[in-house]
Length: 389
Image (cartoon, rainbow, N blue to C red):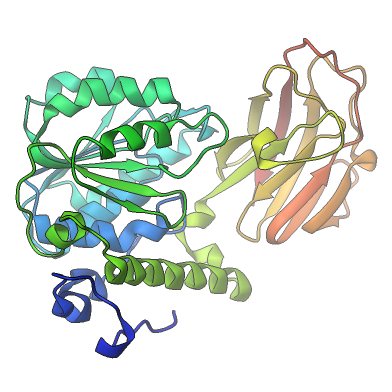
């Protein structure tokens, strides 16, 4: 990781900003996250550390844990800084339309890592609504919402959970900068900002920090972050550069092959791009995620009206070998055979008489299936049998 060093002359601090905070007070200056690069929270892990270390919340609740990137940053900080925080992570661990579906591997691995913090951390495998009864009104100090990101889902979750957050407590809202694929968090974030003081991290998909009214003084850097006029450029720069350094560390893992020894390497993401005109985009894609425990049968539903002209399948997999026994598209006029599949990008086809065997050589391997005619009103599923080794 490249060093990130700040000098007094290199930073511009707004009026009221205590310069010494930027120079050395932040606990994240010595933070080494154990879980990173497995989700979209990577740019904000150092803020997560400082939030818990400085605020010392008695009760922290996360709605939407997935692989635990943000949740375990909170837990790690609570343990290392001896904050006495009680943490709860709530998820069904089944996935959703934005995160994609995934198998039992995710919950198994999260549960295993949670043993490091089991004296104060509890995982609740249930819906957010089912967990409500576990928490009293005005009892939560920090509430992190990172579940389904549609406007309707976020409104429902906030209406249900904000009464559980104490007055003066902090709400973290992830993906406030995403305006595609049906995400509606940004709309609600704009409304919340009108109601109380807040801060927006624009790095990555965006993170909103909001204090439930009435506002109350916060300890340390948090008060500088939220106090108006809050133009905390120095803090924003600090967290951006720490996040960038961590992303560079991940890039180096890919370059030198050590990515295989990171938590990221425990699962493979399958992204399917659908098209009716030959063009592919993130907007027109769906996800699934699998563990590496033997053969897997997966069935991925494409959205209504999706075409297969052609389908493109990407694997985000840490320099693995992927063996595919079959690929089938339901309700299609024909089915692809392995000889008709074009292997491109960071993948190498390996010889095999029966299987489609791929050596993943980088971050962007691609399979292009032949164009297949599909009915415009049909429900399409991509069915695959494969294993990752």
